[in-house]
Image (tube, rainbow, N blue to C red; front, side, top):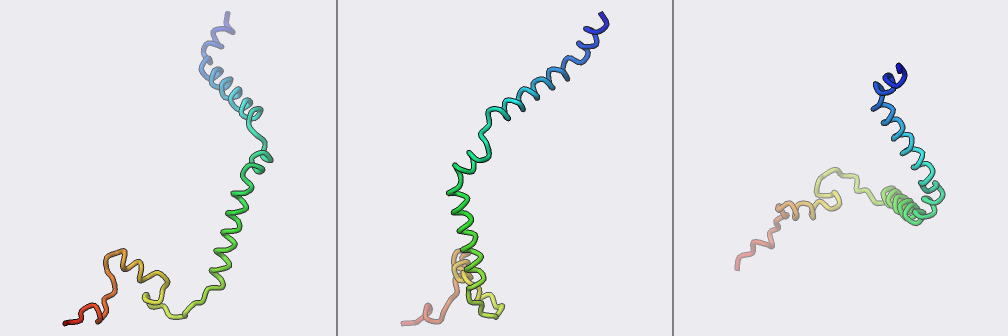
Length: 96
């Protein structure tokens, strides 16, 4: 009679460990293999790799002006326009 009482004392850890082991074993048995996943996603992996190569290539071959003024940074004018601070020129205030 002593063994069933000790087993009842550990009822929840036993249920938890059995559930965990059944879950892990079913995942291992039913999950697709790595080659199946690689076969399915190879176009995505290839296009991502080519895009990253293109970004690195154009980053290394783009012309750098050498000055550090904010006006010479690419896209700075567009960012100023979107932020609501467009660059004003003399032509925009011509009097008639």
